[in-house]
Each structure stands twice: as structure tokens, then as C-alpha cells.
Amino acid sequence: MVAAFPTGGPDAVASGPHGHLGASVVGRAREVELLMAALESGAHVLLEGPPGTGKTTVLRAVAEEERTAFVFVEGNAELTPARLIGHFDPAQVLDRGYGPETFVDGPLAQALRSGALLYVEEANRIPEETLNVLITVMSEGELHVPRFGVIPASAGFRLIAAMNPFDAVGTARISSAIYDRVCRITMGYQDARDETGIVGLRAPAVPEAWRAQVVELVRATRRHPDIRIGSSVRGAIDMVRLAAALARRRRTAVTDWWVGLDAAMVALSGRIRLLESCTREAEAVVRELYEDGFGPEPEPEQPDPGDTEDGGAPGER
Figure 1 (tube, rainbow, N blue to C red):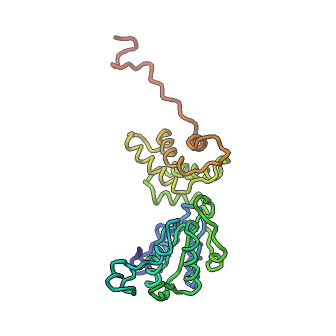
Figure 2: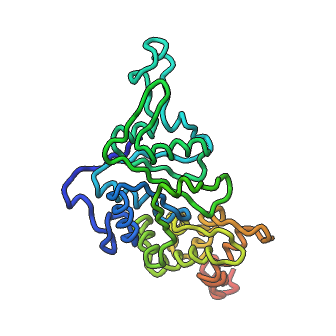
């Protein structure tokens, strides 16, 4: 599906929190500049980095700035060449035979015809035979379809692939043939200031100091000795959202210790990946990190010994 962007004037794209391109882009000025320069030079691009580092956000900002469109493709093991390229409609073929009028464009053919950016997510999850189709298109600038003919690339067509090099489950190694045909831009995790700014954009308003603590908790998951893969900034966004919702339900402050703990458990326990040698549950590691950042569990409040249920004096019946 083509995602179209508005074609307003220069003011249509706002500056981000740090003066960067796009209101949704925080701390990615260098990557945005590199991507725009690569596309302007005619190169195809591979965006490489862990989840939650803003690869799709950067692409959307660039597409908006250039007033162009992009075609989104979700990379997975089910993406066959036919699903990527397109197919002939069987009913139409029976009636009219093979030809351009009976061919249904897939995302690749659609992007080639319209001169759009073809954004392929999780490229290292795509079968090799499907990747070989992309290699041919990048090399020759055209697509050869049996019984159809040639679909040349319209001006503006570029391939942008994204992948997480740290995820080994259900992935395959990207061949040197792919790397030889793309320019590679790596995107690591941002610093604490930028991640706090992202949470401020994507989550409800909360006390700034508490939001910074949430971000630091999430960043701590990336360096804990028992954690193989930590959480992205999405974990911090969800934790703040959950805490805000829990606080409303419990009629308490979002900074309440138990509200924060429950929000952390729900938001982070499924996002972290523990080392195989770790014998603890994810929840235990999350609680440890939470107590490191927010302090130990508070002692329950003791009732005032001078109070009684009926408000009378101590011992009065």
C-alpha cells in the first residue's frame, strides 16, 4: 500500500524538539541527512539497527520532506517472489489471457511504476529467492515478469531495507550481493536526553523527573548482566502510558511506587531477552532494576493508634 504525504509548502514540516526534521523525529538529524543524501545520489539504502531506534520514523520524515510516497513491505518468511512482484488474476486470464490488463501489481511493481520508495522491513527474514528479485531490480533498474514483460523503474524509485542485526531467531544472513548494492546506515540507541524527549512526545504528560527515571530504567535493561537483549524506548513509552492509566483507576499519583512497579512488569517483562544461562524469571530481573531506580518497596503505612473505626477515644466502646 502506498502511504502518501501532504504536498503543502515549506511550513508543512515542523521542526522537532531539537530543531531536527519532522515533529516526530528526535535526535536523528545525522541519520536523516545521510538518508536524504543517499537517496538524492541515486543509492539504495540499508537501515541497520535494533528495534525501536526510529528506522521507520526517519523514513517517514524523509518521505514527508521530499513530498513523495513509499510502499511498505513487511518482511517475513511468507514473502514469496509472487507476493512481492504481483500476479495474474486467474479469472481475468481465463477471459482475456495474459497481459498488462490482467496483472495485479504487488508492492514492488507498484513502487516501480509510481517512482515511490519501497520500504522493506525485517529484510533478513525474507527468503533468499525473494531477495534475489530485489538484487536484480537494484542492478538493472527494471523488473522482468514472465508473460508480462518489463516494468522499468520510474524516476524516484529507491529501495530502503531495514533489519535488526542482533535478532537471530527466524532470520538469515544477508548476502554480500545485497550489501554490495546498498549504502548502509547504522542506527543505535539514542542518548538518555533524546529518549526522554521521545517518551514526552508519545506518552501522557507526567512529572519530568519521574519520566527520566523510567527512561533510565529501560536503558538499564540494555546493560544488565543477565539480559541478552534489552528494551527499546517503546518500553518506556508503554510504561508511562500504563502507569497513567493505572493511576487513574486507582485514584492515586502516577509516581506511586506500586503503580510504577506494575507498569514496569507489564511493559518490560516480555520485551527483555534473558541469557540462556540465567535461571531467574524476567519479572525478577525487572523488579531488581525497578528497585535500583525507584528505591526499595515502601513500608506500609501504619494506622494512627489514636484512631478508631467510630472515631471515639482509644478503648471506647
